[in-house]
Amino acid sequence: MDSTKNDVAFEFLPYFRAYKDGRVERFFGTDRVPPSTDSKTGVSSKDILISQETAVSARLFKPTTTNPPPQKLPLLIYFHGGAFCFGSPFCSTYHNHLTSLVAEANVIALSVDYRLAPEHPLPLAYEDSWAALKWVASHSGRQGPEPWLNDTADFERVFIAGDSAGANIAHNTAVKAGVEAEELVGLKVVGICLVHPDFVGREGNAHKSWFFACPETNGSGDPRINPAVDLSLGRMGCRRVVVCVAEKDGMRERGWFYYETLKKCEWDGVVEIMEAKGEEHVFHLFDPTCENALALLKKLASFINQE
Image 1 (spheres, one colour):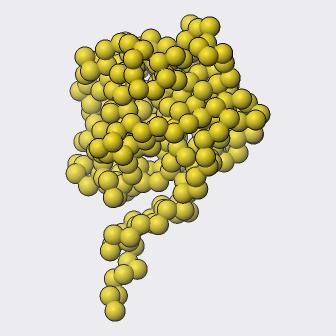
Image 2: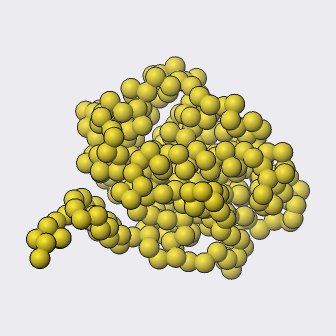
Image 3: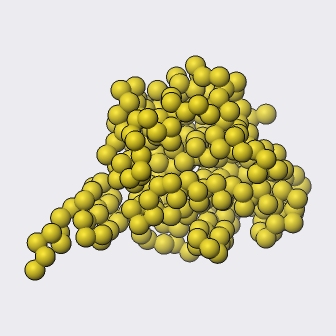
């Protein structure tokens, strides 16, 4: 009998465990709720395939509106969290969160199902996310494959958002949008919303989950996890950023460090920060009706709809 069969390579309890023999157990994000029209908010959703080659897909959300709407709606591209290893746009937690956000902000939203580590180690999640953004841009002439985007989205008002690892992806996607803007003709990223972002802190220490998800990394010298060393940071392709942190979150200081780094760099946009008192990491996903979660939802909505 192989005595190493149950040896753990990495675990992020209570959400995830990987074994040295290659087996992976995910305890969060594995439920799948079907797309629907929400009876309470009227938000409709449907699932789409972004890439036949990589099988990257997404869930698209649209608020109650006439078809076509009297005016185009802001477009939000969302990346879920989960240490790059777990989570899904199709699970009840993220489906419900996006439904609430779309209803509050009156936006159309694309929640991207990027590939997960360790089966698909980084940088594949970044590549999938960039592919999703380019797929969205292919609709800017109103001739893309998805009618909800052709008919409803305002491609001059695009926002990128995410929580935890998804916030990291949102940031890196926005930087690439500035560096490689020629690949996004017709699309304008106005701002990014980073909720409890996963970066290094002031001490420059990357969490062990980062090394597990990205075996090729050199740690704190990697600009994808440490924006402070990113020579392209000043070219980030948006002009507004909101960072949301939580007082009792172990990643709180990382969000503040990112905020301070962005303020000091050559980027000429406006960054703001909001802190939820007495709350822990991604509290809003697990207690979505609490006072602070509702305040966070309203903050994101006002940020998106700010003139």
